[in-house]
Image (cartoon, rainbow, N blue to C red; front, side, top):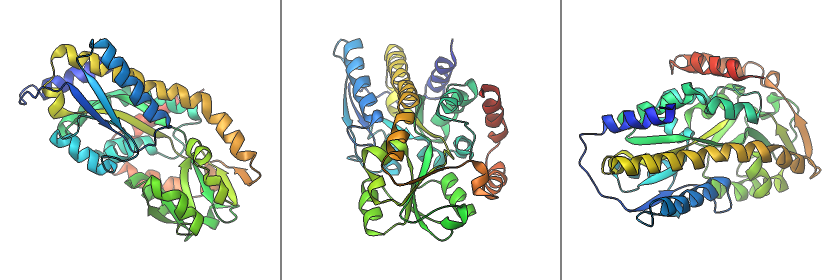
Length: 325
């Protein structure tokens, strides 16, 4: 039995006492827009599930925060009001701090290394805690690209980010990182980012290459910093209440297919990250490439803070060392 299968079997045991609730027509929520790789993966998962179940199951995909932000969707998953989600591990880490270990600065050397970390048994084993701690079943990991910085002003050192209002995804590991730099991290939902950067509501943003390019955030930038400072995992989730009402056959079918499609996003980003960054660099904005030394003491500060928040940081670093090339 592979690691994902063992994790899903464990979730079944944890939830075996739950009341059954038949579910045939599933609803799946995401925050990403329709063209996004995650949304496309969700649509493909739904199509394959309908085919594999001979039409017994269907999946209606609701992208672009149609069902609320991630915190709201996670609450809906917990109550069973929402069946499924492809969700950032960032939001999960707000409820289960061990998942914050994925965001250790420079844990991954590059995008391919990030994929190997997420495909490790150590990463997969973390999913086993989700039914009891968060009320969801995790089927497997996907990811977005590594994090970069887009700034309206000139940036030549981390000191230039001090006091700068910098848009972040609202989760603790990223907040701690930018606080250590001395920036003014500003949580903001994705649909608001373009206008906020255009009108100066924020001075910089933390973002991946796909959205910097596809949503044209570079149009309002003076400087693009290719820092690759954090990986950004995604996880396929099923409501634990919904999972408890499924037959063993359906659990296997849904778990395997969802794991397959979220994992497929890893290959997509490995293939596309480099070309996106090349296109961004070709826009003519000031483009600098930096490493961990750019952030001075902020990386060490983050490590010290998170060593006290999770017991798995050393384990994740060992995985990173074992999978490095």
